[in-house]
Image (cartoon, rainbow, N blue to C red; front, side):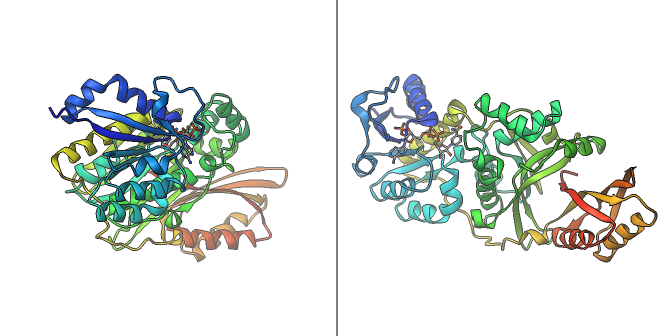
Length: 429
Ligand SMILES: NC(=O)c1ccc[n+]([C@@H]2O[C@H](COP(=O)([O-])OP(=O)(O)OC[C@H]3O[C@@H](n4cnc5c(N)ncnc54)[C@H](OP(=O)(O)O)[C@@H]3O)[C@@H](O)[C@H]2O)c1
């Protein structure tokens, strides 16, 4: 074993960074044996230097992250600050000053992954980011390496624990959205400002990263269609139950049937209770991957939290350190397929539409005609009437999102349709 240690600069020592530092210290001997050289924490950049950080030598702590990454003797920079800046500049500066980078920063990778990969390649360095998607769950490496010989057609996942916790609560207790969110906040599963989670921004960033890797194509955050889950109601869950389904916020990345384009989207959707993703409870994450040769694979586990996320960071750290010792780099960006990303209107799936209608003869025929005129074929219809009003629940066969939108627009114009109570996509069949 080499005795000269590999030097690691830790940028950020919060929820994830403090766990990275702890595991680096407590598992130092095992890590050294696995890597073939000891790893040394050479500096820790934070915002508040006076904060007491258990297990961290105060002499290592600095507020000057730029000076730390410019030192020139750093082998690996671990970026766990988060956000776009200063993380982006620090990462590119690290490459320019000879370090490889491990990051957990989904927001940055979804927005600027291509430029960061280019910077890594230009400097002959590694950029690893297993922790950016679904915390501890190995996903990036299986997609990038284990499935490199296969053809991935679909990635369907629950990649946000907060929203899964909320939806699971609504499903199991009949609670409304706000009540379930309040519980998630009280238990620490939701942040004080839950927007990034409940509006699907966090999941969309992960979808962009997953789609890019799965389809060897650049997919940016802006390419991902996104709908949050704040409008999901207890009534939607009741409807889902009647269909033998539950509701999950899904990230869905698909290759078109003709293979010529891809789509990436995040929205709440009904999935059958028989689908493996339906049984993912609480704040857990799971990702379902469908490939030509492998068939269906499911990856499951804790998608966030300091220690699980640090596990993924440490795995990357070991890989990057090994590369460093052997003078190699791991796989870089693979975007050779350069497939176009199609708009949401091209997505083809099934729909569950709940309408409030007048309870009188001929309404059903009128509604059915509108669906037919837009080329959307109906699978089932359920009608419940009371006091001259009725609710009509229509489940369609597969249709394009554009066709469905046209249908709904036309339905809203019918005198007999009082309102469109909910539209939910049905996935996983
Ligand atoms: N938390 C999770 O469960 C989880 C899961 C997967 C991925 N991630 C990703 O991991 C990254 C870190 O998340 P986190 O939850 O650990 O965040 P966090 O608890 O807020 O920690 C952020 C750390 O960065 C430091 N920092 C902030 N601005 C800085 C600056 N300008 N210069 C130097 N240090 C700065 C903070 O310093 P102070 O300590 O002085 O405030 C803090 O130590 C994010 O990209 C996040 O998306 C997190």
